[in-house]
Each structure stands twice: as C-alpha cells, then as structure tokens.
Image (tube, rainbow, N blue to C red):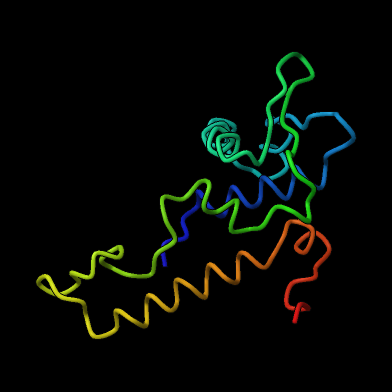
Length: 139
C-alpha cells in the first residue's frame, strides 16, 4: 500500500486546521507546524495541493493562514489523501496489468479489490468523524 507521509501529514494537518478553526480566522501554518511537529516547508507543499483540490483557501497578511472551504462533515479522508498523494495503489504495476513480464500477476485482482476497499473506506470517513471519534460506528 502506498500511503506515504504526504497523506498521513496532510490528514494530521487538516484535522488540526479543523480543530483549531474559528469563524473567519485563518489558522497559520506555523501553528500547525508547531502542534503537529511537521516542518513548515513541508506543510506549505502539502497546502498548495490541498488548495488546488479546493479543500482549503489561503488568507494573506500578517494574520493570514488557511481556512477550510467546506464543513468538516463534507471533507472525507479520501479527499485529503488523494489531493496530496499521486495515487493510493496496492498494485505493484500501478494498474498497467503488466506485473509479470507484461501480464497481470496471479494476485492482480486481489490488489485491485484492496484498492477499491481502501478508497471506499477513506471516502466514508470525514474530518468530523475522526475529530469526534466516530470511526467504525457507521453501518
């Protein structure tokens, strides 16, 4: 499974942003960096991608930072991970079906199914769910 630190750190940063957001007051990356112990330079790279995915908006100025563009119950973990990761893919061939000298490996279908399960799982969990520890309580 290719869930790298980009995805993990982006989720942590978005949870921090959601938890510390106040009405129309942006959260500074320096504050997120300090609380989450993630370098500010790395967060800046992640937030460029999150902004391009329309998950956050940036606010310039001395009191600048970031705000969420949607309510926390409308942002899924999949939205965040897919915004910063190139792909979430358990297949070694990245979907080219050329795992073994140009043909799919015997477990190709298994890894495709796992990809779908991961996407379904992460798509069913929102920032709200994680912040309120409602993971696993959905039908």
